[in-house]
Length: 221
Image (cartoon, rainbow, N blue to C red; front, side):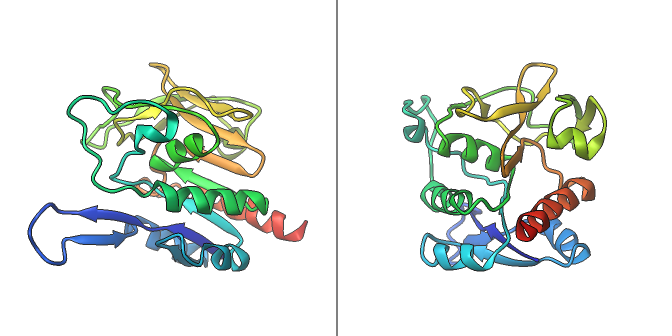
């Protein structure tokens, strides 16, 4: 199984020559190994078509960089700075894989980017969802959903490391998970599943196995 994974840009804000890095969280290494996944990085818009051709699905990972509000027709909040713009690369990858009806899994910033790509908008700042102490909160799961097929529960506890969230849901997408304070935590549409939390951090193999199953079914069809 070959999965394309969007690499992220990060900087430690020092003058070190090597401070700017493309990275993938190390949490994914164990998951990819356990599921026998060959992952192929997407680090720029170049060769995205070729990567899409040889891969069975796309993983849109979390990121330290927020989506610039210009992409959903809003102004930047006072005092907010946007250092890196990953959105053009992410948008191209999502559109290509979706055009080819290959499964897409979005995580944290990934759900936000997917929502914006398909015409939704974001809350540029929310409170009480960047839980640095690794605590968890409840989300309600819609029964008629991929998420419910995974967990078989109407409520689950998830981690939370984000300061933005979905505001207006993209057309045709269904909200399948929502927190007690109204924050949208899961959306789905046809070949796309996206969640606001970080299942890789909690080693949630059930969710990743389901994603791989969707990729396998897509190949068979």
